[in-house]
Length: 226
Image (cartoon, rainbow, N blue to C red; front, side, top):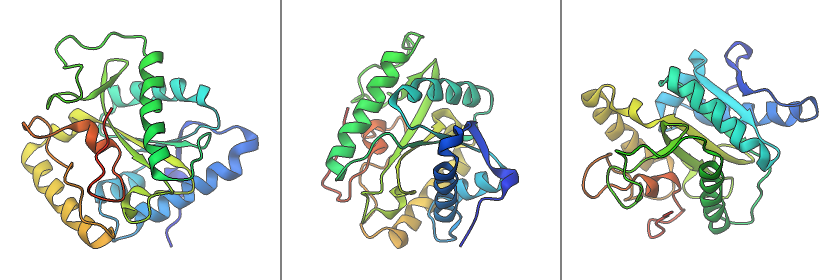
């Protein structure tokens, strides 16, 4: 099993002393899952080994806005980095309840955002060019839950976990990114116990909806929306 080399552990928001043990366990399990050679996203594995993943442990909802501001600052300046939020203040009995909380999480972020929505970005999530903005930074959010049973790639530890990347970072090398995306999605077939979700698409294409990719259920009949 993989462990987190201490020199690569970077806490975007250092955990308080009384939460350090659980935070360390979250980091350990996250590393074990993503360092598994079978894990579909090898970019996460590479980012972990290079120290480009930054973690935050959030035991209260009031911790979410400041953590998101720290994430936006980091990703604005270092767009290839990845932020992982362990949202330990949320516990749920099932994925349907988690799906509702994912919407709440985004509403909390919008309510806390101090910058206006960019005028050239659609505000309707049903538009193929929509993506989530926070503090004027374009983001892609990946919601993961321990309640994911069949879609194992979306279960990253004992707590509700949000993986955040700069959305435009996917466009840095279009040809390479397209091939990598196809390869990762083919690896999902061998890792998950359910086929890749049909919501997985390519930003900007007419049928693509970014928001639908944020939270994927355990069946391909479940489509998440804001």
